[in-house]
Length: 275
Length: 275
Image 1 (cartoon, each protein chain N blue to C red):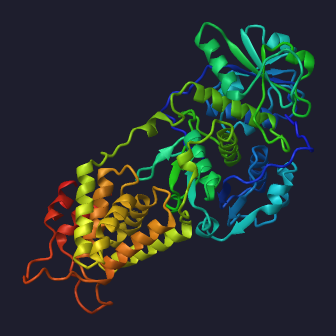
Image 2: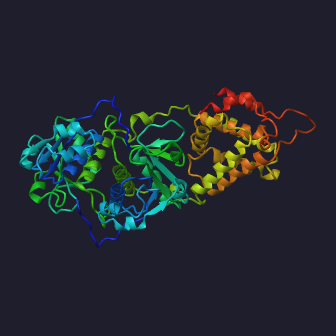
Image 3: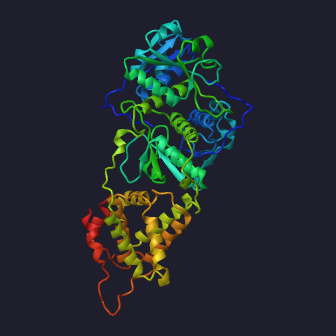
């Protein structure tokens, strides 16, 4: 899925990702990679088991070096979030208590409002096996949980970060389609273009006695147009289809090899050029 | 993030996940785990490098055994999707061509409409390093791309599957779908039906020397299929189109009454003018 454009400026900023007592360097690296994919860059570790820096983390980060290099390490969670204004804690389990629980979409919406104001926001992720302890969750403003299969809830830490980072990215976009993809480069076909296609095809079929019996012709025409007009065609597509009809209509099947020249006319090239 | 409730019934169903020539068993296992988290269960492998079954895959699946056990292996992508009605291909790169491109939310909405009708849907994922080839993308109805950081686009295959599976789950939690999407009175066409249409048309065109120069044939075939595979066709529609091709292919033009008039369609000029 690689598609990095080195000419583009790296996105940075966004909420801090705080990992509490992460154990495996590989997971930290995968977290950094997930963050970089969605433009996050502030990674904070609370008391990582294997210390820091960590070669396995760098290697698993797949060149998200800007995240690894800027990673900060803290002794306690309280210190790690001291400069933040709004913090959400991710958890897989339902918890009783007074803290509001929301899903990733609502949570990233709130995080964005903070970040786009004057505040700084963060997202807490727990240990690989045990998640966050209750006294750690107490430090957060709200709880986020993921809409997973109740009978198989097994997101690892890097996957949980990936989903939150992805929702963060989407929360800043009007559409979830990258801007480069949004504009159709082809001219949409007009109704007149469509009518030209219908006329062309129907004439060619009429010439072969396709519309039989005559009494059924109106219904047959209606069906044919319905099939062909379902989609929003672009003009080059209409031209392609008309080239197809023309080829089928005008020319006979060639005899098998060595039995005569093709009866194509040279102007036909243009029909193909809409590609 | 573990929070599995063994009392709950496993969710199954949803679109098939199709991995084309996956290389690492670990990735296949992580894909199975991602799928299970969001209630998907139909995993299909096209020509996996290290064969199947694969111990590394099972181990990386973190007990998503129901997905691993039901995994099907195919020799070709065409076989892997033959029973499906609507297929999207995931890609990180921009592609020129006629296929519509959408983001994960829109794509999973479409997949759900198919699955909640009478159809079966699938999502294609490419090889770890090179993604999908153009002729493979041609087999899909639409392209999905992810809203990633343009300067660091490095989702691996398991991450891409995770995001699509997550959006699939979310798409089922939103409000009811419009009723008109739910009632499909006609049988949806399968990929095999579509392939029959393509074969039929391409043979008829080949017989007329349409594909010239030969070097351009692959691109021309790709464009033709893209234009014809945009919509979710119903089987009666495919049959109608094949009737049209048969008529154009098999029969010659009848001579207009009492004239030796040329068999040109006057509207033919228009074919060139748009190009």
